[in-house]
Amino acid sequence: RQAHYATLRDVEPVTRDGTRIAVLMNAGLRDDMPALAMTGADGIGLFRTEFQFLVSATLPARERQTRLYRDVLDAAGDKPVVFRTVDIGGDKVLPYLRHNDGETEENPAMGWRALRVALERDGLLKVQARALLEAAGGRTLNVMFPMVTEPWEFDAAKAVFDSQLAFLKQQKKLLPEAIRYGAMLEVPALAECLDVLAPRLSFLSVGTNDLTQFLFAADRANPKLAERYDWLSPAIMRFLRRVVQTVAPHGTDVTVCGEMGGRRLEALALLGLGITRLSITPAAVGPVKELVRKIDLREIREAMDKWLAEPPRDLRSAIAEWAFYRGI
Ligand code: PEP
Ligand code: MG
Image (cartoon, rainbow, N blue to C red; front, side, top):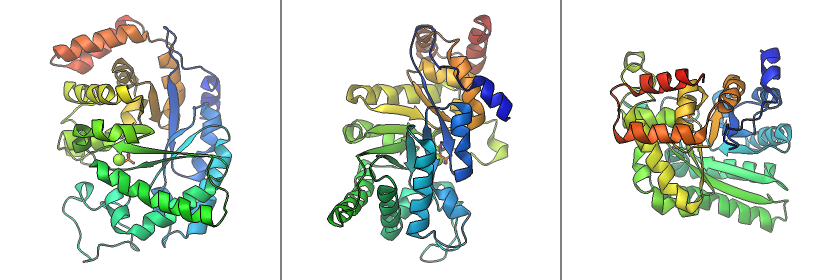
């Protein structure tokens, strides 16, 4: 694996018509960090902070969280890291974090999880905010919130960071040089209010794993439904294109951090929608960088506009055929 990574490490992901695509990687543990240098990814576009909570028998103490975040930033060096605040609850129930009434949920993916837990258990987010702000002292902190459904939830989560920042300032601690706050778009409802939220965001990250399961009302973990929808369906493509168009006037960066971005035809299609930032599994970084070099952006954008205006019955086959004839 290491040898394979090395051959593609220095490939520059520039399209044939000269656009530099950001190819970032997803991570969640200290052990993932060496892959950053090995793959030559541009940074960590999604650091899943809940991994530390999931492998721990008790709620990780603030000092332990700070240490992890600092180690991750040290390992990344000059490359950016986007920390996602905990996405626990739902199907990732922790023994030390239970519902008040002790009930289990019938639909955990649509349940008490992620930001919903964090905003209710204020202490959880406060501790994490403090750990992230301290770990990023003297550096840039990029932080994003999962499962934002309405704009006020973003504001409420950011307010927790603001108050921790004020506290650290009062304590004369070393503060981050810059803080960039982003939202994850995973719940379709947020797309309807994105024009309201966009001016307050430093960046938007689209979590297509959750987004597609909600768009299609099809559980992402249910193998019986795996054939029920396709990432390359006109509905998903049109939805994502509208998201890109909505935030474009605000100059907000859009990254896709779901698994689809690491697949060949899906990555091609996303570029065709005007997305220029992908955060993907480390093993896909090299292959996607290579793919980018074969693509003419103008060409795929034109083709995508045509397909989405009058969707073929099988968009995947249309894209596959298009790519085949161009040797992509
Ligand atoms: C997603 O939902 O697409 C995502 C990146 O987050 P996760 O897979 O951790 O839910
Ligand atoms: Mg998600």
